[in-house]
Image (cartoon, rainbow, N blue to C red):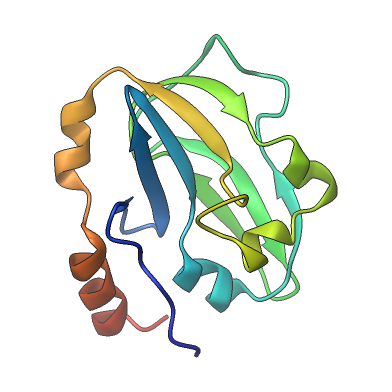
Length: 135
């Protein structure tokens, strides 16, 4: 396993999704560790056409990520309304491998309860979690 990065400005769920907060919006994607474990991402099933009225609760399944090794479910770490889906990933799912914390973001959720962020791990806690939970 390669050494993976966890940016300090993100929060992480135990299911390996990350959250970057911008105002009242949460950008969500999968961690560098998760994409590294999965291998080459070949397909994403995201709520492509369901923005604006698609309510999600923290822990809800919002999609699937398929790689050459496995298919895994994706879960939203925060509650709110999905306002955007990264349409570029339809044709270039491999972006999740090359830029998991940048252009590899998956959905944006307008948060209904920002206090849920307190239950997520910071970068150091996530690095410790990954080290203590080999997959």
